[in-house]
Length: 397
Image (cartoon, rainbow, N blue to C red; front, top):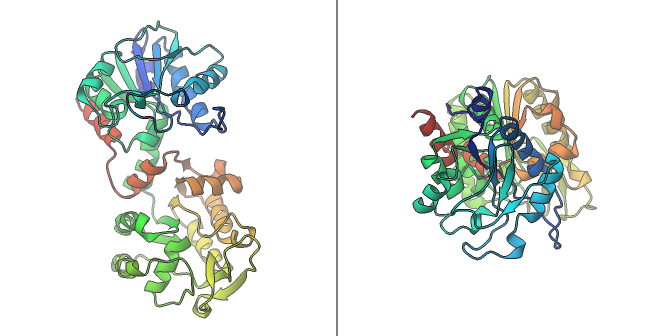
């Protein structure tokens, strides 16, 4: 995908003295007292802001935080804690500007944080009047918020239509590159791991991937539905019986292309869902009526690991078992380690997936970790994200 890159503008001196508007993703979790409990997103936004400052731009940064009511600013909606943390990371004061739509005073070499953009009336619905007002604030618009790329809002889409120049920041550009590498021109074989509790939430992803991947590994509650589709019993495990025909269709679509959905040959079961439940490894053909399947078995995990090590590209979304419980984490752990050891280009995304990557300490062995949950899933569904679409359109002139 061809987009203008902010890094290229800076490298060619085109940002010097210019007013640069950066849409970042600074939507961080906070404690009841407003203190930030996890600042990964703020830290991730620093390279783009520093790049703009180093280029001699007058820098405006904004983000949403939480779910404020448009037109009704409340103290808990404020980006004040973010401004403080950003100031610490940039080693300079970052003034917070409220009511900024009609004008912002900022000089080259300075940075200001514009208050929560979702408080502005018309932001969510991408109001054209608001978009044009925001576009007048800058010479260059930079989208560096992949987590919001699947939404066509004022600061993610509208402003990009009307700003003199609209480009991708380093975070967004990295996502575009990684997604292109994994899905548009992948090294084969291409393996996808799609796991989670429900087939229904991932059905469009499974259908889309079944047209493209060489192996579609399913896990969690999704695997149970596929086991039913393969004629196996699953006891009282979580599954969606009404979607068995859909699962069969995915299996058939893969088979027609000479690809496969590996069905577990062994599983780890328990009689109740608890951290201290007794774990029993069973053949997939021997599940009792009162069993809960909470993980894939060691034989299945080893088989899948061997296949992943042969892959050229791996897309990972979701743990394959209840990895939060020690007795049922082996499947996810073995797969995580196989991805880490594989020479394949790997891209991973989704909250539970990131938690598993952190738990097993394989951050540095995964080719690319996507930070945008919903946006990442929509990419896997084969959708074109609005933020990508408008930036590509602007790059094409």
